[in-house]
Length: 238
Image (cartoon, rainbow, N blue to C red; front, side):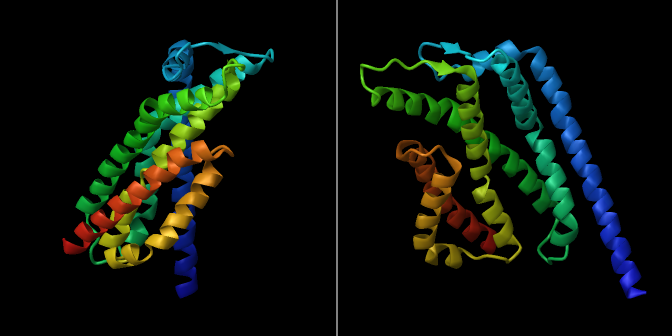
């Protein structure tokens, strides 16, 4: 009987997870279709960090597939709060086993998770990217003229923006884990050396293989780790 109940519970959770994955995918597609209608404005927006706004394409299908990728990119960005809600709801049966779990805690994760994600994406696109592009073009020398293809430029922008958005979730995750008693501020503080090295490795993995771009992610990672320590302390005291 116990095995039967366990199997049924696993089956129900599998069905629930599948349903949430389908709804999440549908949300991305629907928003992506709407974004494709305004694809020229989307492309114009991501060109803001460029000084000359000049992009080219060198393959007949490059522009078309770039618009498709940009539309899905917008779908992920706009649907991010809904996707986060689905993730939290999937984890709720496990989180509710903790005595410190509450509905207010769930809504705090949802609200601050959405806020930090958009803060990271905006920081990457509007803050870091203009400086990074100017710096990278500046060190290329006067004998080289920077002309980006639309596909490579869009892929670089999308990857950088999403990476920063997800990385900015670190303080929210730390707060949630500390609230549930899974980590402590003391643990995070004592592991700062490991965090320093881990941040450098993560930056090297997630960004293009050049040290300058990696530094643009490594620095914010360390700041976010410090913020995670502060929020973990706040979560413990509540």
